[in-house]
Length: 468
Ligand code: ASP
Image (cartoon, rainbow, N blue to C red; front, top):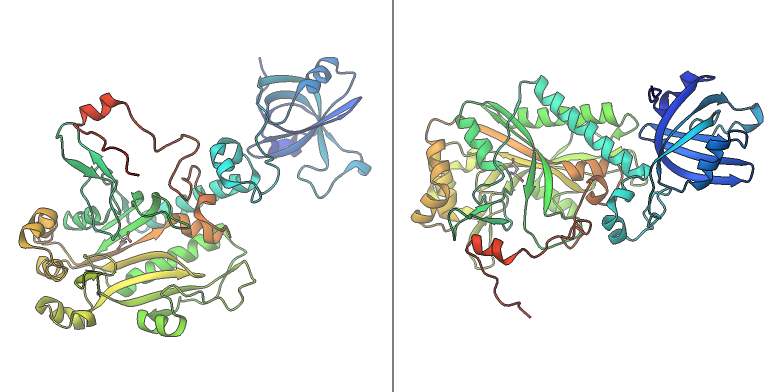
């Protein structure tokens, strides 16, 4: 019977025993008589050696090339004092091979994965993402992402929040971006929209008697490609009923601190509780609503959080009408409620909206909501919606709110951006397993791509002649 596999991280406990290790060949160094292999599995890295007297293993070692997957057996040996490399993981042991089994050969890797990879062209990295992901930096990022998301689930679960999935095939939610549309085959000419946020569903859940909701949700926004945007990204989406603003801020602050203490013990939070700055003051003092408040920008472990509060509810759009600055669902601050209902002093109205900035990035944003239908209706009227449009686009929301929906509020964290900031990565693509390029393409799958005429036909669609 084959020997049970041991993970490389456990080899220290197996000195002088025969073990079986599976993994990739990182490097092969041929010293003629001795052939050295660096073998890695997901837990670590170890040097192995094939001695000439182990003829079978030696012959096999001669054939191996980087990134082949292998299963080897051998004896774990302490290295003689002189050969110990204290700089290296497992630098005091090596595996003396007795046999090697090739599990799969690899084509020559398109780039070196032993480096951090920042110098390799990104398109190249994304086209061969399966190889790129093998590099230690990305392995670390993706595993840390898992750890942070697990912490999020545990944190909110422990406080009575329930994770509820909401639909991906849904109706347009105005979050300020363009929707991705999905044509319906059964209803030709009609479309689903992919969610820009689970906003309406989470509010409807409040009306449904779920007082504490969260979801690690994928959201989709068809925006012009700009810097660090992705067509799809992940939000940690939260909503709670009967909650006041300060309690919502405190809850999220506790979450941020818990994640950092558990996952990033070396990081220092510059100021606790997080400072709160009004939008007006932020703009006046820093010229931005996501100021970078770090006192020492050279310190990669310093985290400066700040809540930005009291945003203007409305701003003028390019046609001279009013539009919302965040989304239409926010409540006005209590002192502006009458103005909203009377639709007066519109430019003056402040929303119960709060954004969280971290080192110059907006990493979360949310608000207390209009839980009474007349307030949401007033917002929609201010932004120029006709009664018919209000009914067709928001009838369901108004009627859910009118079913006795309790006061509620929530927030959504930009998970990718949070992780990128905590991992000191320059962009969110470095913390997403399979990101799109800055131009919105998946180069590995080669998509977007055209589809068969038959598929279009079934959907009742035809493609207009290419625009030039
Ligand atoms: N739905 C909002 C967003 O995606 C967040 C929120 O208000 O909860 O930005």
